[in-house]
Length: 424
Ligand code: MN
Image (tube, rainbow, N blue to C red; front, side, top):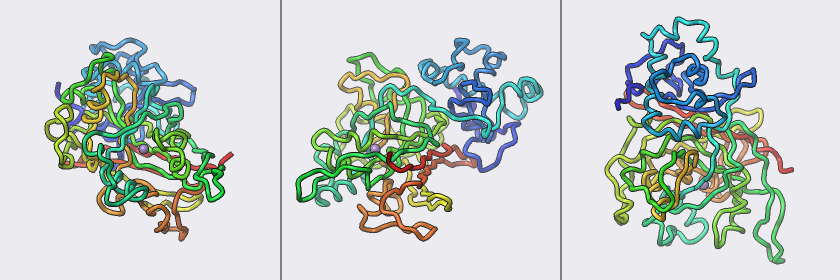
């Protein structure tokens, strides 16, 4: 099936900025509440959000096999369950409806009033009801930096790291939508000489620059997903801030891995950008040496060239960009992650979320956490307002952005932001 929606020469009849993250070639999916408290599934073009439930009721998706209520939901799970063929038909149809030479909706002011809103007039919600959330550890630069900081620079990578995408099962109940404040967590920290653990608000609150992919129902329990099929089950991607309390994490993580240092909050961006929309931005991933086992070997270009950025905005001050990285630095591809996740027969469901792990690049300005950027506090960062940061302070807002750009088309993710509030 052709990706009509990806045609770089397409233009829309909606008035949008040239610099927008959401040109007609993007067509992401999200969930929003209107001023009249109607919850619906929508897409976004420029600074307009489009109510897909309303368009469906008005007959704009006629000819596509969809249930009447598929968009009148507070999550995308049912739509995602329909599978890749339906996602493509719907995305292509939306592109056709808003294509500059199509008069059908363009010249129907009643239908436009019922289905098109300004972004500032709606409130974005979590786009999916996330059943299970897994976080990987798939950036070699990040794993090497953390291994050097916490263990030994000569043996920074543990013996398994180059053979499998290391991951852990995270907590889905505390995944929140961009814009939701984050309360500084309290917890235990390493004991001093007295042997009594510390307790109180985390002193080493950090962000982790990640992306996450959302899956559809992939496999029956007991049946692995072959690697060459894995991408068929990836609906799309969001930006992801895996907030981390390093002091809590450092004390609790042995031997079972991350727990309360991670589970207090995880922020995602509200628009799921489809894997289809990212198709033009495929690139070859890092060379993998040693060669992975056969079940993790795949064809070319399973990585994606997506620019990533993190900014810190102190209260009432301008933001400072502290990191520029790229999704293509990730050592283990999403296909490898999904193949590995299911190789034991674990079943993947619609609305599951898989985090990439912190995406650090090869240079010091491309490190995806404060732990690495400040080298565990040894080299504080200077912000534009003159203040310094080793970690994140109360009232700071952390803003992540991502976009891919090629042949004059920019496919962006909008923002993934969260403001830190003092501990209770
Ligand atoms: Mn993480």
